[in-house]
Length: 424
Ligand SMILES: *Cc1c(COP(=O)(O)O)cnc(C)c1O
Image (cartoon, rainbow, N blue to C red; front, top):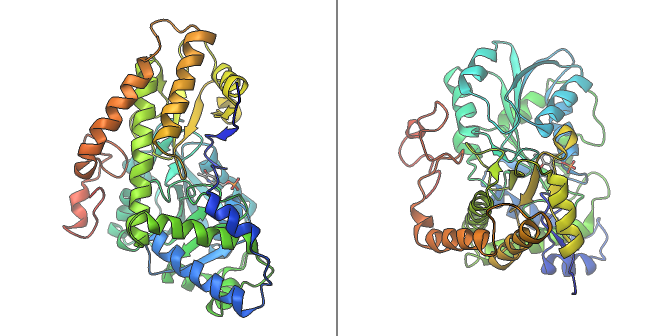
């Protein structure tokens, strides 16, 4: 049979056709009025997409470049910083902090779990200058509770800046940067915004801009203050990835069009889309007798699944690719063979979802002969979730961290009525 190559990976994600057309047509010079109009428009749209009044900076780099920029611009050698980690991307913060001479304290949780707020509280010191974390840890499929950490910093009158890698959190999680008091929120192009790799972006609070006046770690290409100055004139400091910026504009237009031109509402619909697909995927995998790797706080960005006893995740990844040319991802590093991951962020719809679940079912029944699984087992579960969520999505009462029970140690009502609406 014909096999169409399809990405189900948590970056890069499937490309939006309108964005691809915009890229092909982006034959413009970056020091022209035409580009300045485009860049200014995209920067303004990004603010709405992120949901902040803070300035947003775009960098021509993959997501890690923006992570590095956050560390190099906000710290000085010898600064004490705190990294909250439960996976490969959390570990990247630790490596970056060390690379820039910081004294790095670490709160870690086992892979598949999120850290307790009490542990964060215990590790926070008076001299902690910055806290680095993920909104969603893509390597394990877990969602961390950003508002709980933000609240802790606020309540303890900490001077630490809160820097959040939301590279797969944006477009999959409700994030209220300004309301919670997040200082830097980082995104990447090859994730929920449906365009190729090559751009990262950061929303930066005034507190963080002030900090940059005093910090002195080396930086040149990723000098955020220089980029901010240029952005005010609709330009970037160096030659930007013009075609990707055109693509980003088209993608944000598409997201806005999901809600009659209201970009913030369109983003919320994108989040709900990812939540529904994630819920369908979880129930399909559970129905086939598999377990979730991050059952307590699953992210809507990607689902990490433990293969049944006696099988490796690599068998699933290879069979899905060989038979259907669909790409799901194996575990990263030492998790290879132990979990497979399916992405939900960005340009995935209902049909993509049932197709992949059908493919998983084929592999489970025909190739791996999983006991207790027959045709329909997974699809019935997913179909039911889809049917139910249509009716209940608006009334979803889960907390930010995806839990249905009382989440972490945080009472979300603490934020005050109307201040933070986590799932409305
Ligand atoms: C994809 C991703 C990154 C960035 O990785 P790059 O390969 O540099 O784009 C960082 N953090 C998380 C959580 C990610 O999912």
